[in-house]
Image (cartoon, rainbow, N blue to C red; front, side):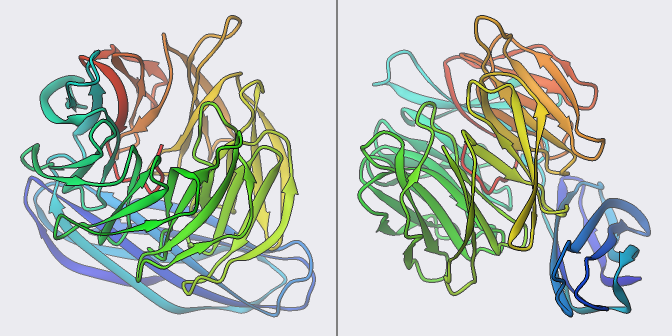
Length: 479
């Protein structure tokens, strides 16, 4: 059945459309036995399917009589010029111990056109000269030709980069002079340079496009920038540690901050309210893997499940918009370092293991419990994990060692986790294009494009300096 429609959206050739949709399901279990419900939902453009997802919900034991599940969908479409109508459809594909009536209590859908010049065609790469006292640059790589088409001067020591959800602004953290450069992606010109805290190391932008957040490692705080006004709103303290990783919740409820204390890998995690800048401590000390530092934060697509990966424990919280953090019994593990939540799935998480492990980990969340873990073959030296925008592949960079070549591992999430390994000279970070067709792996002074549809390494692109950060599409996690 069709549950929502946005009719007659008119696009020009240089425009794309961002589609945000959600619907609230409700169903009743027959009794408290194991319950499952499988649904398929799809997005149509002018009656033709352009996106599809299959999800299963329920409980293995102790089913609730009445169940609700909020489903979110985010999709960027580049159809070319013309008039388009977008529709969202949903159907039941299977159920067990469920009464016949499936209700959709709420549904919402918005389609917004925006300038497409940079969103689908450019990779932005920050790099530094050998002399860190000199200004740094951002290289603009045309992903259609894999060539540098422009360089943009920014501040000293550029590192983390982040693109806003609307694709209009690229944020660049300049750790050498404690500033952030704002680049207008329609002109590829710096439009503002803002002073922030000491040693800015990570950036994210809230999904509602309202604010950007900069983690200042050496001043123990986070600078909040008004995205529309292009100015600093405020700076908030996040304890006595060094903030190094950020995560934006999908509902724009919170920005989560991981901090590192001075004692080895010990650290804390805070939530910053997007609405009012209130800072909430999750209340625990965590034991993060130290070197190299990885982003230990993840959350579900509905924003209500928050995950923290640490050396010997997988911590899990439920949360509400008002800031109620409720811990669930932790899952004791060994060496899990960073993971990604597969949105629109069966609550599946893919997790990097310790740097000396040759396995990845897969876990499924079920109510207050877990299914798994399942151990997937991988390689030693897992460095950075990322998910393609269409949710079809998990990409993991492998640093390698004396016995293992560096490269990129690509796992097909919808094909029994079939794995592919593409050997590369060096592999550090990975960034994926919005169309999920290419991955770019950072090397020392190069980025290496990989065709992740054909699983083939393409010719490396020389950048011109020491590569630090990359951005091709909006991401809710800092690298």
